[in-house]
Length: 196
Image (cartoon, rainbow, N blue to C red; front, side, top):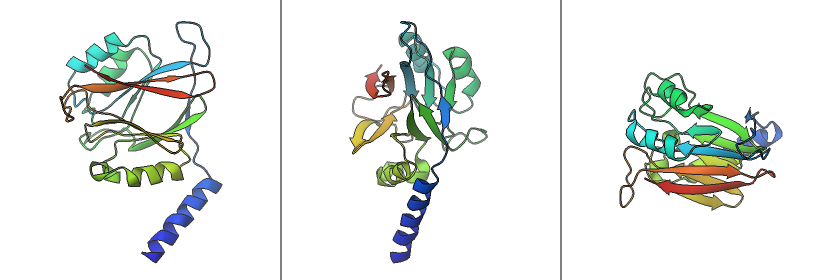
C-alpha cells in the first residue's frame, strides 16, 4: 500500500510538471453571432439504435459539437453524417472493432475535458478512481458513460458528467437521457440534463 501511494503521488507530480496536451476544439460562431459561445450535445451508450438519437439531433439544433462517451457500436459514420457538425467520441466496452481512442483529453473554450467510457475506471462501483485520474490530468471536467445512469455533479472545481443512455436507460423512470453543455465567453460551463 505504501509503494502504491508513493507511485501514485509520483505519477500525479510528473503529470503536473508535464501536463498532457489536449486536442483543441475551437469555439465556433453560433447562429446568434456571439463569438466564443458553444452549444455541445453530450451523449453515450447509443448502442447502434437510431430512434432516440435522431430525435435528439432534431430537437436540439443548433449545436456546434457532439461529444460521445462510447458504446456507439459501429455508428460513428451515421452520427457524423446526421449531426452536421464535428463529433468527438471515445471507444466503449461494446465497440469491439472500433478504431476510436479509449480516452481523449480535449479543450473547449480554454477548459480541459477528459473523455472516457469509464469501464477501465470501474465507474459501475463509483467514480473515485475516475476523479483522481481527471485531477491528475488537470481536467476541468470528466465525462464518461457505461453506467447508463445520468450524473451532473461537481467535486471541488471538477465537473463530473455522465449523460446516461439514449438507448437503454437504467435510472428510475427509464427515460432516455443526454446533456446539453453551453459555454460562455469566459469559458464557463453550464450543463443541462435532458430526458426524452
